[in-house]
Amino acid sequence: MFFINLPVGCACLLLTLRHVPASARRTDRPVDWPAQCAIIVLVALLTAALNEAGRRGWTDPLVLAGAGLCLPAAAAFVLRERLARTPVLPLWLLRSRLLSGGAVIGLLVNFAFYGMIFTATLYFQHHPGLFFISFGPIPW
Image (cartoon, rainbow, N blue to C red):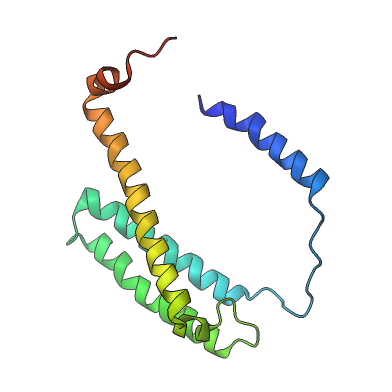
């Protein structure tokens, strides 16, 4: 059923290439590779720690190590952003109450929404008959 995404994705790609003009490259803002790598490491470690905590428990050494390594990765990102001539995320943006408030609200909404989708799929896997009671049998 997920293969339906292939033709839809290809159609979107073709339509984008045909109708959306290319953006002008900004040579005055090079890619900040150290900051990009630090944030990728931070997000990967945090995701792995949160995923493994559900299976192994919060006191597992692997989970604690992953969570603990998030702190140096975050510190490396902040340090790089302070020293960079063209930062990925200018730190003064975080002082804006509107931006910070919107980011926190967006984080909470997405956390709740995707958490609900994740737990709903687990619930339906463990109680398969409930799907058919609620929606009826699938016609194929």
